[in-house]
Image 1 (cartoon, rainbow, N blue to C red):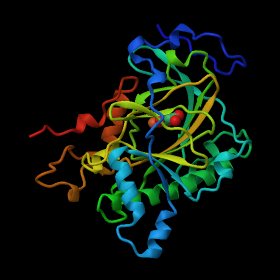
Image 2 (spheres, helix red, strand yellow):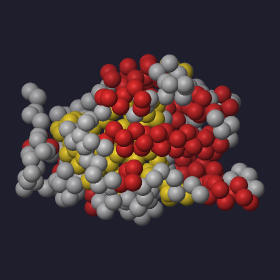
Image 3 (cartoon, rainbow, N blue to C red):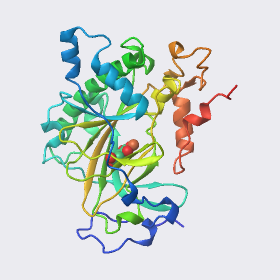
Image 4 (cartoon, rainbow, N blue to C red):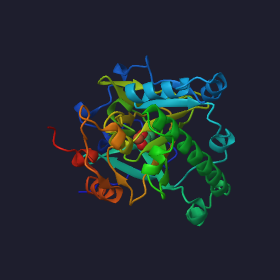
Length: 327
Ligand SMILES: O=C(O)CCC(=O)C(=O)O
Ligand SMILES: [Fe+2]
């Protein structure tokens, strides 16, 4: 039997969790055991400018990105050049979230997500919400800025893999997707009994996440333990998606992450950059040699999306389907 969706739009927070949100013991977040030390690296994109002035090569920035990608698969960026008003305008609020369910058991997670494509903005503007009235304009500008930042990061990550600057962008194809997912985590009476978003990896190539200040919720796996990614003022969290893991032949990992809930509400805005549907994704030739045989077979991205849809609602193992047998 389907569980009835829980209405988050009610104005009061319940005193305890409705039963259809309570996770089985082994799936609970154990929040008190999560580390806040050694969280993911914070990288200053202005380092690039300094390095260029000094003529260093490879630049300090590329080195930092290389280390962060290898050790964490996650980092935060500051001085990214996206004007603060575009993601910090108080008037911009998102409504009409839908309930996201995760996992095989029909347990709801304590969140609502709202998502829509962000590119090409000219074609989709009329599909975006009419309220609040400035949403289309602000989102349009945000999508353009984030799209440009994605290209900049793809170039830095390409260089950090020893590849030419445009390598990853080219491999992701001429009609890449840029999608928004806005996540709302309402105040939760019992954060230890539920999750905001279950553990997952992002399926696309690269994610730029803005998280609201003052409340921590995002956690990433590091050395088998959950590490909290506390919000840093005016920073974006960057994480590598499954397609970068495949293109880098497993050199860089798409890392499991989740969101826990709090007694107070939290909001995050994720933008996902994904390949063209017809792009052929597979290990980049320069990263394959005798010591590093190909881990994945080539596939059209549309093929992987079909597999992703087949696995909806399960603990996803999508890229694993394209792994080659180990020799
Ligand atoms: O709310 C967060 O910080 C995590 C969001 C996330 O992982 C996602 O939307 O894929
Ligand atoms: Fe995610």
